[in-house]
Length: 259
Image (spheres, rainbow, N blue to C red):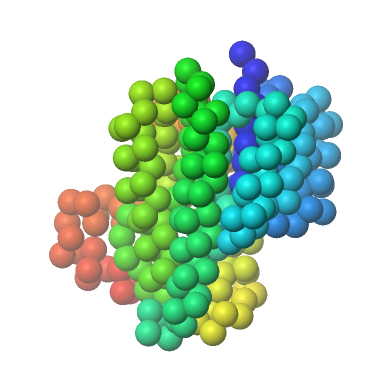
């Protein structure tokens, strides 16, 4: 049965790659993100697969644009079956060297924006018998990591909110997608402590898992209603070390390259 899928951060990276996977399955798409040109490019690729693909400009820091998206969905009578909450920004600064305004921006985009979005669709979600929500977190959402204090905090917070939402609503199935190092441009757009852009590709990111492979794994995990899905390579060992051998995690974490 074909689905309607709403994706945030669909103009590039994991969001764009997941959009193409869904398009290949014949699903309808509502692609949102900051850059309209990038969204239209992805939408065009999806349409070549025969999929219906709409775009809508969305800034998760601006609740007004989220309200506008909710209004558009209502006016067009779109009923999403799947929400992929993917948009986000990373960080490259120590906790003390990062301005509070930067911390707040990261929390607004990665956490509060997605909470507001889902609450904006509460009526639609409650009226649906089966809704799937894919929440793109990060391996850094499972523990603290150098140069990522606010980023880690924002990804940690997603687990608390959306796991609670899942437990409260039998018709909702939340899948936490937990990528490690995936070959995307996220490091280039990461925020420095003063608010500037990092502008470089991390070596670990460059050697990470292919984004299209990541997308296929992510879509399959949502379809199978997995609670959590780690996606990546050998860096995922840190998640298991943190869970089962905390002393070893503290010994190793500071030695792992954070760029």
